[in-house]
Length: 431
Image 1 (tube, rainbow, N blue to C red):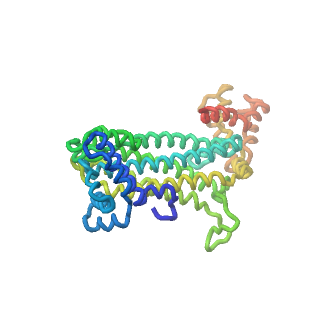
Image 2 (image 1 turned 90 degrees about the horizontal axis):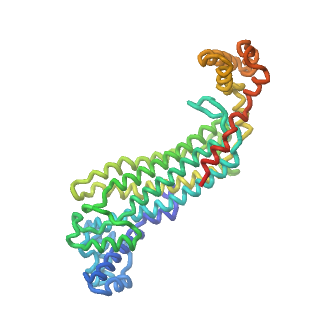
């Protein structure tokens, strides 16, 4: 991922130094287990720890010659450690190190992303509570439907990201496995107790059967979860983009005093953060198909998945970390305009009370079909003429013969649409 969309902490997880450090941790943990099992001489781990140094530049130099990253790594360690290094990697295969390391990196990244989601949840919850009863129009198919509140709109996103948090927790658990089973996964040259020891030491669980690789359905789930979170980010971003349109302007991204919106038009204030989040979501989702295709490996192992994972691992996690932080900051600083929400509510002159009138007509004796026809006729006239829907209803004798004026006025009460907001909030925010 390019620097523009990278945050330091998660980026460091995917840097060469951290990857090689994890490789060394795995090798040392395996050697520790072998010492305890008396497979290799005691004291090896202590000597290796004291002399081993991670030198990414040197490892890459060796890899250019040998064309094998694990061999290059072990050779570089041997250069510093000496003859004791021959006891490293005993009975193991490259995938034992590579796959266990990749899962650790995904776990480390996932834990950062979980914290990002917590931060975002806090930002959303604050806006939801602040605007719990801030009236705005609800829209279906982009058309004015019935009143809701802006807080309720925010609450839908809050619940969605709670679900995302749970999905990610499950996916991190799914990916947190370790395989130290040797060539084709038979443990012929390495004791299964070594694997158990390494797993416990590195806070992972043992992969029940790993052929020569950890099964990639686990990874497919992880990247699919990242994609779902990205889609939730985009849903939020698209909502902001729509609400910031000039003719709507119910909310607006924060715009700094020195910020510029357009190189040509000085009046512009564009929803660039939301648009950027839409783009990042597309990028993150693009990792899903390759991750699914990686499930299909030949026999006990091939490396068709390797190049894919070296790209989508860092790119998807780093981009999602950036996107979640951008969204959280955007929500915190969002400009919200209740007056414009009220103005937009009034655009259709109350036609959104049509269902209330419809239901009342069925109560006083009209069939639903008759009620619908009467209400629709008055609503369409009010909309077409830009006149009061209430006035149309109040002058329709079919209606006033059955419903008193006082009763009609009560049908146009905004409080009717907010009477159960507290119930929704209470059940959505309960622990």
